[in-house]
Amino acid sequence: MDLGISGKRALVCASSKGLGRGCAEALADAGCTLIMNARGAEALEAAAAEIRAAHGVEVIAVAADITTEAGRARVLEAAGQIDILVTNAGGPPPGLWQDWTRDDFIKALDGNMLTPIALMQAALPGMMQRGWGRVVNITSQAVKAPIGVLGLSNSARTGLTGFVAGTARQVAGTGVTINNLLPGIHATDRANALDGAVVKKEGITLNEARARRAATIPVGRYGTAGEFGATCAFLCSQHAGFMVGQNVLLDGGAINSTF
Ligand code: NAP
Image 1 (cartoon, helix red, strand yellow):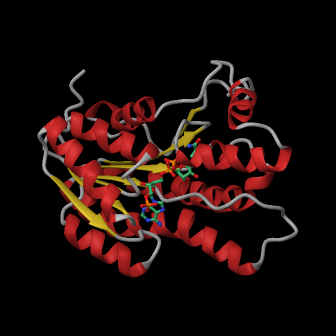
Image 2 (cartoon, protein in one colour):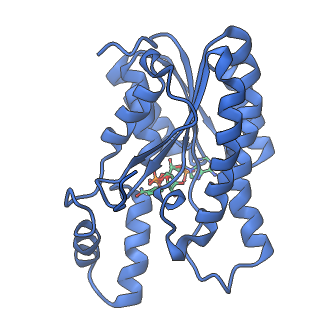
Image 3 (cartoon, protein in one colour):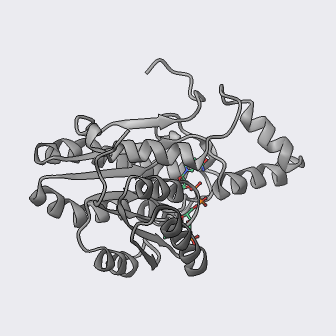
């Protein structure tokens, strides 16, 4: 299917690895010019070079911490016009509700709620003026079904979801859509880190931890960054102009609910 977005400029945050990388790959495959970002310059440059070679598109790589004001300013300056914005950043660490301090919450809110909001505030006016734009926020299945040990994530991402629910409807009349993509368990470094915590706590092997988690997913396996990226690219496509303020769950059926 032609997604109709060839030549659009797409900023994909936190995209040297994992789900962000999957989104960058799929948008490059659709012919978008990419602005990619991550903190580590080496992995970012390597990912950008691979995508340029595979898809023949222009890729601008900006090594910066997207959760800081200075990092965002550098990324936004390098990006210039943004037609498509995919927000993403690392997730907060797991822990216990009684241990989290105010500082822990501020850090989580900064990374997973206030950063995507600041990026939307920067990108939306230009999109609205040009009469076309797409925003996809990478959030989490935790928005639909809370994960106790990820209370910092549950809190920050639910705040972002509330902001999007209202704002998406305020900007929709200008040809700009905002939607959220909710990953369930996907085979990325983040999933490995969470499995590693289970290995430590329960004294089992990494393979056992993975098999246990895979058994909780009706499709019987972890999702892939490729599947995730393809869904993101569809949400950014010309065909998705009637999808507004939705929370699209990609979890292999793990959350057992009718809606
Ligand atoms: P990942 O494999 O660990 O990749 C994270 C990517 O983001 C890397 O490229 C990393 O590069 C970059 N990054 C992290 N923090 C950054 C920052 N402050 N500024 C700029 N770049 C940053 O993670 P993932 O699995 O793709 O997860 C992406 C998001 O989805 C996370 O918020 C995660 O919590 C959420 N999620 C993931 C899953 C899953 O199963 N994978 C499930 C639910 C939710 P650098 O380290 O070099 O910056």
